[in-house]
Length: 79
Image (cartoon, rainbow, N blue to C red; front, side):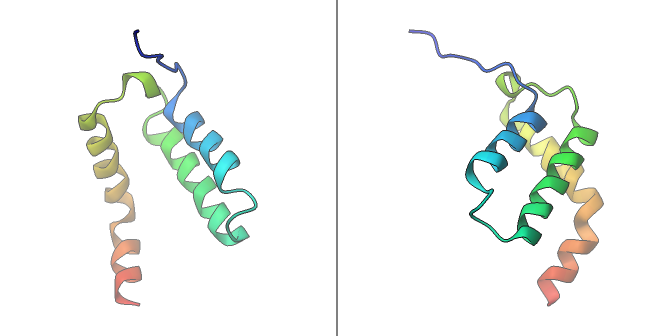
């Protein structure tokens, strides 16, 4: 039986995941951070379809995201 592929943009899937699994489970400040990530995903990869994602796509996305968040991560590690 062929696997079912969801044709949904990755940033939309991420928002669905947050709304389903994080709303009501995390503090409001944490929830806002998830929504900021969703916004950034939409900016970085607006056309990336969840069903077409590869491991290489995920790594490229992490690399892009890291370029804009490297300083923040270093500050968090030090604290």
